[in-house]
Length: 359
Image 1 (tube, rainbow, N blue to C red):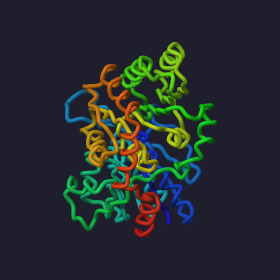
Image 2: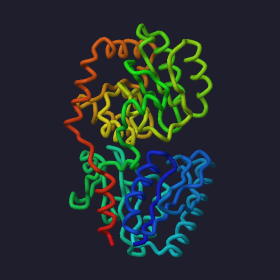
Image 3: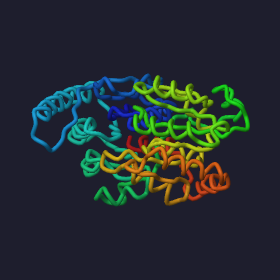
Image 4: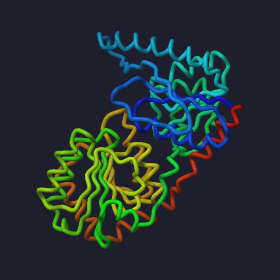
């Protein structure tokens, strides 16, 4: 079976596609991933298949010179996608969202090639809302997503969001040794997503440096490329036990020691929190059609996370919330137990099974 996977340039699109490629590898499928030509995309080196690149663009509803240029590159990418379809001759085309996927899914529909799209967020993006009408199957991470798509319930499969095979809980001592951390401390993981978040980085590092229990803390902070030096210097200056990373591919080590995670609420992050059953302070990214607010609401509704709006994010606010957690450790345990209400699925195997059934 020849399977073509097409995604956007963000980690939230690419990582589920890579996880699916790994799952499909054992089936003997011939796999090709199509990515947009973007300098700011996540670096990808799949072991399970090949990669092709096509031009892409970000389009809005505004009339502007940037949009005219965007239409041109969209059409170029559509032509490149057509050539890939003709040359690769896929049996199925799988889309993971973003404008980049529209043309290839359209060509697949036109040539009567079987199609499946996967939506990572609670609220689907515009591309997947459009493509849901022509796709043979629509896989979703959350049951709530179906109400936004306007298609027959028979077309929708709740698979969850595929995670990489390496994303499993590790021995705590092994994980502590990875960071050269001590046992018996309170470990906090901070991450602002694949590109980092300057506001989250600066506010949290300042709040932690002024925390009454800072001597009991050990911090893993994934700051992104731009803020790495700034945050490293801040923790050094305040004498906090820490490990700062631009990007951490081996997130399973951080999740395996975390007592609390402070992060954005991207779909992959939410799935990873569910997998590791981790109490979280979620600060949803305020843009992108409120996707992250809806994602965060799933864990907040179960009692597994506390949500702070980005507009309310301040040093004083974080200090109050953090000290509340540190004073009441049982609260964190209750949040961890709340994951019993929303057990993570084996999304990768479920999605792989749906893909193979298209043949």
